[in-house]
Structures are given as C-alpha cells and as structure tokens.
Image (cartoon, rainbow, N blue to C red; front, side, top):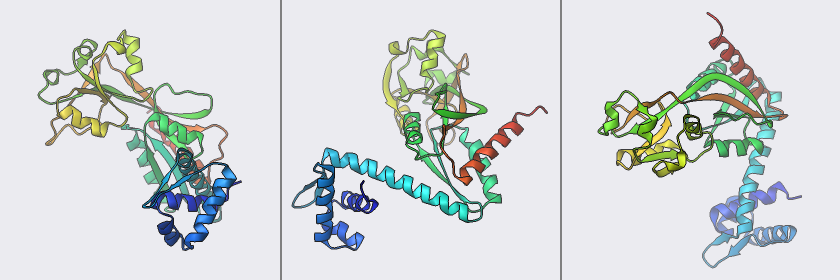
Length: 299
C-alpha cells in the first residue's frame, strides 16, 4: 500500500516540475526526496518521472498516478473532516457537484438558510457537466450531484426537486429568429447550431418530436455555456441551451427564445446509493426534502 506521505511528495514534484523546488516546499532534502521517488517507482514497478536537465515531467503512468493521488487525498481529507465534525457542534462540509441550471438558486437558498442555524457548515461546489459530476459521485468525492434529465440509474438515490429547466435557442439580437416569440422545430433545422456535448442535455428529447439530430447543422459543441456565448455573439450559430443561463440584457448581443412545443428537463439531487453521508450532508439532504415538500404542498 502506498503511504499518504509519498503521494504528497509525488504531487509536489508534479506541481513544481522540479525535485529541488519540491524538496524546498516540503522541507526535506533533495537527496531524500529523490530516493523516496525511486522507492515509489520500484514499489509500483514503473517509471513515473522523466528527470530532465531543466525540469521533471511525468510519464503516462505518472500522469495517471497524479490524477488518482489527488482524488485519494481529497477523499481522505473529506473523511477526516467528517470525523472532526462529529466532535464539534454541528457544522462540517457538504460537497455538491452541479452543471448549469437555474435550479441552483433554490439549492443555494436552502443552504444559506441552513447555515444561518449552523454557521460552521461549509458548501464546496464542483462545477462540471453531468458526466464529470457522476464520475466524482461514483468515486466518493461528492456527496450530491444536482443533475438534469432522465438519469434514474440504480446506483443512485434521487430526490426529485419538482422543478425543471426549459430549452430554447440563444442567438444574436439581430438574428431574424429573435423577432419571433418562440422558435419551432423547423427553425432548428434551418440554422447553424451550437450544442452541448453532455448526455441528457436536451437534444436526445428532440427525437421524441421527430427531429433527426444527426441531420442538424451543428457547427460547434460545448460542455459549459459561458464560452459558447462568445461564439453566438460572433454569429457562428445559435446555442441550444437552457433558459436563464446567459445574460440577454445590457451590452451583450444576445437574445433567448424558448422552443415551441416546450422542451423541459427535470431537476433532481442524486447521491451514491449506500454511501454513508457526514452529519452535515445528512442534514442538508433532509432540509432539501423539507423545503421541496413545502414548496409543493397544496395551498
């Protein structure tokens, strides 16, 4: 088994690209650190570092270890934090992964109210597409994922938030489609499109309406919308995306029009089934349940 100390040493070298500089940051001697890395390479049976004259680079195996080592250290730190939380007044860490969705406003408001009662609670956000969020859920690096779409896989437990996001086109203000109240399925097939790469991003549901996605004129793809908006402003195409994620007032040359008939994706909180949550994460999940019930209770 690899010692945690060696993982920290290895990550320092990968970060500094120099054994000498890494030794200085770790407060160990350069010969000691070099020997530790050679021992680690012998233990794993592979070369991890290419020791050049000016800098140290990683082999493919070293790159793989760097990624896995950081994940292991993150997981250990989360575990230690959870034990500290049990000894202190209720506080602690909550790790949430999320993509781009307006439903995040609801989730953040729930946490903000909870933190007023428990000031020691801290929320750590990881932003990414559905694939990367689910990957981190599977590895135990996140407590929850805020996800959109038909994601009901048996390895997760879900809390349906009773909310959804609406899809449409983000386009330049001077685009002819901006003169319409909504865009139609036929419109999608007549303009260049910029679409999300991630699964369950809405374009799969276009099949339900008889749209052949492969026949559309896709000029670019994105995983998060922010940078795609610059492509839209430049006139390269219209982004098929969720309403409310991009600012369409002010100085930016952007306009959004919803799709007609409406295309929506439901929002849910996902957690890895059988994962033991920290006290803080359990409390956050229970408060989410309470506020979802309250929001949808008969008036």
